Length: 345
Image (spheres, rainbow, N blue to C red):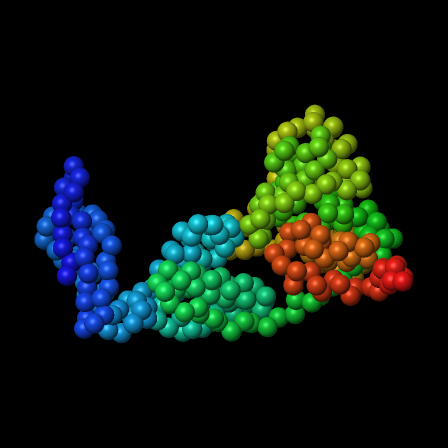
């Protein structure tokens, strides 16, 4: 049975003890009721005893019948390594629509969310929500000794690889507006994601011209990374840095109006790429077709592989989470493999 005792200066009631059902016994570690009112604490003790006894009778899954999707989101947001801000926004979107639905039937909640919100999202975008919901539920399940949960992945084509020749690369960079050319140069020779580049500050926390390094503090995977500045990028950024008086703070890249670009990762409703119009105009002027802003990342990764960069190094330089994400670049071209083959004696 459970018992209560008062403790502390506030005289709050603490509850502990055991709950038994037949030969099954569950230990309830001491916890604070949060109140000094004996009647209220007694009610809470009775509720906890009922919950524990139900778990003994029906098993741990009974927890799910009393829980809602919002409980899983709370568990995910309070885990030791917090999610990145973009995922926090996505959780907020899902919580508004399905947070009150039962955790006992998460598939029904997922289908309801897809129908109410994701009908116009691309498959890849839908799958990001799916994987996040699945991760949140599994954090909750792990805390309650429940088996892992899995939602069927949404298939999408993640194998697109598009890269330019060196001549077309330089032609396209030159076709951008003057204020965008440094950004495009960074895309071509460092391979960051769009917002990783646009939100970089000057100084040790970003582009450190003294050390010749770039520190990406906020990334999609949540893992910061530091890379050396490529000579081609240094040749573009150094004059900009000197022109601005060698700043140690403030955004590196500014819009045509001299203002920092909006960080779309913090928007409740994800917007389009802020460079889309500038990129389309540059592609038209350069005569480049079927090449998106994100394709610069494919371009960089592909040329890294063709230059002999191994996949593990590429993964770390580009900030990918696993080798699986970069293996698609392994076969972009075979000419770079010839030298490796000839090494065999």
